[in-house]
Image (cartoon, rainbow, N blue to C red; front, top):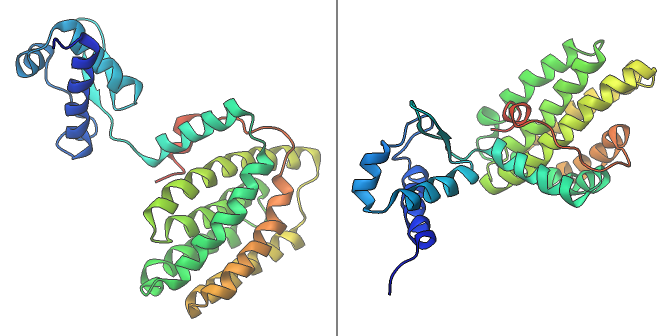
Length: 255
């Protein structure tokens, strides 16, 4: 049975994709020249172009056209996942309240996992304490305070130790953080930003979270984190749908 061009293209794309995912091709590497790929896979130029088009649509390569053309490899990363999730949410008109509700369920689980880590004293708490020091220094700078306190919450996810939660919950955290930064700027301009006393309440809550992590009290910590999130996320909640932010901004947030 003769294989049609699309089927050949999918096979070539699959082989090249596997090389990227196995790490044989690194981020920023150039794919071999077209003539070399044609000789290796023994396919026609249209089939090879289709294969490269598949990989480009997946975000795994960028095809540079022209006399100095070629294909540059991009390894998949968390920022790309967050960007795609955001696009789907925007397309479906998912409201920020829905995003917030998801985080209120997922983040406390991540926080509890931080407390359950046996190496929390060396691999979790030092990172949180550093961010907390930055929070204390930014208490009089409303927008910077918002940015740093969100970093604390993002770190609780990134340090939980479960790679799936880090990817999924981390993507949602990055989307919420972008929304909260926009809210902070608008609230400051409108004179509606929470006063210093409320900011200090949030600081004390973060100190309590670190204390419970240090003790390894995962059960109490998860319950406390749910209450803390409910108290803090109401400020930045908006009735509108999730709005997508640039992939460059997300790349700086998600690791």
